[in-house]
Structure formats: C-alpha cells, structure tokens
Length: 401
Ligand SMILES: Cc1ncc(COP(=O)(O)O)c(C=O)c1O
Image 1: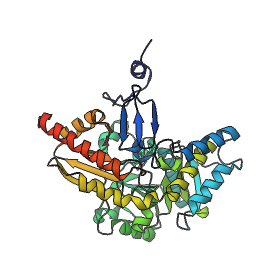
Image 2: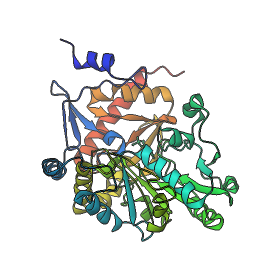
Image 3: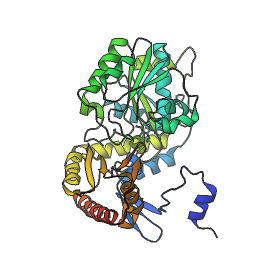
Image 4: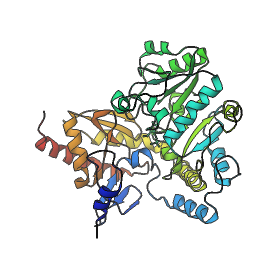
C-alpha cells in the first residue's frame, strides 16, 4: 500500500523539484490539520483565497444546498442560473457604476485572457501594456503580460504587440498611446513582494488611458475581498478601471474567476463574431453559491474593516534583527529578511513551528503573511511568537552566503 506522499510524487505533475509536501487531512477556520493530528496555522490562505477561513459553515451550507439543487446545466451564458445572477447583482453593489456587468470564468488566468480579448475587441487595437514584475496568470495570454522574463522567456514566442512599462515609473507610461488597446495592472503588485503604487502612479495610469482611449484593466485577483482593509483596492486608491479582474477569494474556496466591465464594453463579445468568449464551466453554480455566501460573511462579520487593526498587531509583534522591513497593508504583508537563504529556511521549517508560510514568485528575500481575515488577535500573537522563535532558529542555523 502506497502512502499519499508516494502517490503524490508518482502520479501528480509537479511544479518544482522541491514541493512543500505537507499532507493535510482537513481544514477549519484558520487551521489545517495533518493525518496524525498536526495542527498548522494558515498564514497564507491558499494564496489569498480563504479570506473567510476554511470551511466556513455558511459557505459549506451554501455549497451543499446548491449541489443538491443542481450542478452543471449548460455552458456559461445560455441558461438563467440563480447563483450566477444573484452573485453578479450582489457584487455590483460594491463596485462603481461602470463595473456592473460580470462575465464569470473559472480562474484568474482565464479572467485575464477574457479581459485582454475584450479590450482588443472593443477598441479594435492590438497593443497591450503591462508592468515589470506583475503576475496575471500562467496561460499564454496571461504569461505574455506577466512581468518576469525568468518565468516567461522559455515559452517564447508569446503574444505579439505586448510591452512592459515599469511600475511606479511615470516616464515609462509614454508607452501608452493611441494604438494601445489596454493597460493591465495590479493596483498593488502581489508576487513582486507587495509593492504599493507611489506618488499618484495609479492616477497617472488612469489619466494616460483616458487620454489615449485605452482601456484600464485592474487585476484585483489578490487584493480583492477585504485583503487590504477595503472590499477592493478601487476603494483604497479611488481610481476606477474600465475592466476589473477577480478570482481567488471570489469563489470562497471554490474555483471561480470573473472579468467585470460596463454592459457597453462587454457587449462587444456578443457579435461579429458571436460567442467571442465562451466557457463550459465558468460561473459554475456551486462556485457562485459558495462565493456569494463567502462575500456575505465578509460583510456581515466586518472582516475588511477589522483588517487594519490586525495588520498593526502583526507589525507591533514582529520585531527581529533579521527583519529588514514589513511591506503592505491590511492582511497582505511581505516580511523582508536579511537574505533569501533565511527566507528559504523559514518557509521550509515553518510547519515544525505550527505555521504555513509561502514565497513570492518574484521576490526571494521576503515571505508572505496573508492569513484568513477571520484570524483572531490571540492567534496573531501566537503566530508572531512562533515566527520570532523560527527567526531565532534561522539566525543560529543559516550559513549566510
Ligand atoms: C494578481 C494575480 N493575477 C492572476 C493570478 C492567476 O490566477 P489563477 O492562478 O487563478 O489563474 C494570480 C494568481 O496568483 C494573481 O495573484
């Protein structure tokens, strides 16, 4: 009889030579549990997915109810399904007026693909601008606008007519011109190690897009659903895009993505040719039911509003001479250490300290802290104590290169 560990290595496609290999039997709230009762405090939420915690009873109940009512009926866009329309309506209450038309897909990458196609179709232009160190997904279109040559170079040729500007560099916005279909940007760069826009950068991007009639796409796949202490980064920065991308926490733990725009822009996928973007499972009713229940929990439990105080608690209690800086707001934090070797050690050893941590894709000198927003003050204090002990351990045992 093979162990799950052996089956994992033998039968699953792997993404790296050194997977974390933590076996989890169940998860509840902010905790994940191993097969022998090991208990881990989840400090990453499956990368900003489980904002309302694992298996929130209201989300589980919505999933159960919908699974017993109907699951898949028909490809997206043909049949009226209550979970889809109710969720789209609820989302619109939290978004600016021009973002009232929602196209559901299955993932963040697919939301990116749909939005890029929509922008090209609506403007009749082909040029796409993205930013160095951005991450928008792993499919070909998304990879083409991803900002790391290390990750995309091996897959060339990529989508033509796509160019990269520098985040927080106003000069490089000259790339945006009247041939530009769209500019895609994360309002806060996540995988770059939580980089905030400075000196009105988002406002400048907005102005340049308006001036050139290019569409502005905000990728809020990681910043959405309360993570920054606001429901969306749009509320934090008060800059309104033409298209919004959502995924991750959108599904409350189930796979769901969306690109959202105005009915006028969205309608360009409807004709010449019709079926401009189609998906079998996009907006799956069980995923929409889960997402809607989770978003209602976010608002009922004031999870976004409580985020800033929790952020401060982390910052006040995470002091160590290996920590050079803590970047971020709300519960989207990057802890910058004295070198990448400390980061690797801390992440690999975290389970021994009862914690789950993770890397950023493009910043090897920081680890992320992005727990479920339901984390309590007591749990934060415990996590900070464990992290301090873990940093002491790494100071003693890491040999700095
Ligand atoms: C900002 C951002 N955009 C897009 C994606 C891609 O989402 P998915 O992995 O669901 O395709 C991610 C995933 O990490 C992300 O952080």
